[in-house]
Image (cartoon, rainbow, N blue to C red):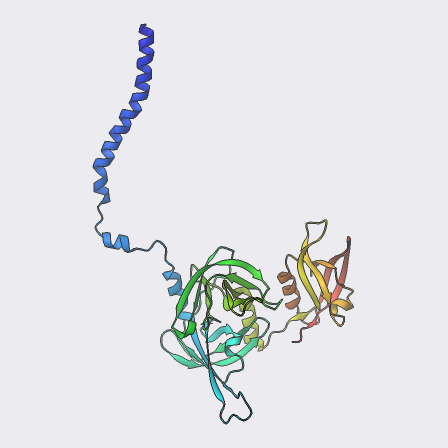
Length: 354
């Protein structure tokens, strides 16, 4: 019996001790907690936002400019005086020499271009060069003490990244909209030579040519357009595009140095595919221009290209970039499959004519 009582007492002690210890800790916490809760600045603590992108906006916004253009139009032959049409857009200062990057459709076929800086200064701008395939244009203003857009060449946009679109929608003044990157590498804008970022940060009239930046205020892309569905005359909500900043920088540098963009021409239409029976990425030729370097080199519809100039082809964009960046007259080695047979050919690249 005494042994039974001893076991019961041990079990009781084992169960009760933690309970008593927990109660003691609770009493101490309740007594001490009010001292820690005192806040000398309660209004400041409650007014702080949970998340803010104001630092990113403040870094990038001084370099984003408002662009105003005028164009004279005659709607009819018998019209005595032409009608002056004003257009609105945005742009960004890329370097201290006064070079500004914007969308071509903002400044195309206009009579006058004016650029308004965020510090209140207004300048006339000249068109240095443009590229219809990427809808880019480079302007220049004669000004000093210019802010420039922050650029991080190591940054690679990823789906899900937070982005901010900065521009001048409807001439309301500089405005920022926030969203995320929905997809990268889009080519659904009518040009296989342009790589677009899809996002849901709103792009309205006047935002075109403005800056798309990340949460650190670094350039991600150049705001371009909203998605236009073939089933409706209005843009679809939440689907907007910006040209990739890496491509935009390459185009800008060539326009500044040469005034035009020179691209290599292969003469194929291609899509993204995996080769049947293999895990090889590449591009499948959907069509070949009969008067093209590709046709003369023996490439035909249905061929699957997996390597150009010694580099593995991982996407249509990357494959077209390898061709576009080759100077006319360059000979490129192309490896491809025709059915299950691996083949190789040499192609002499020509200049792309628009």
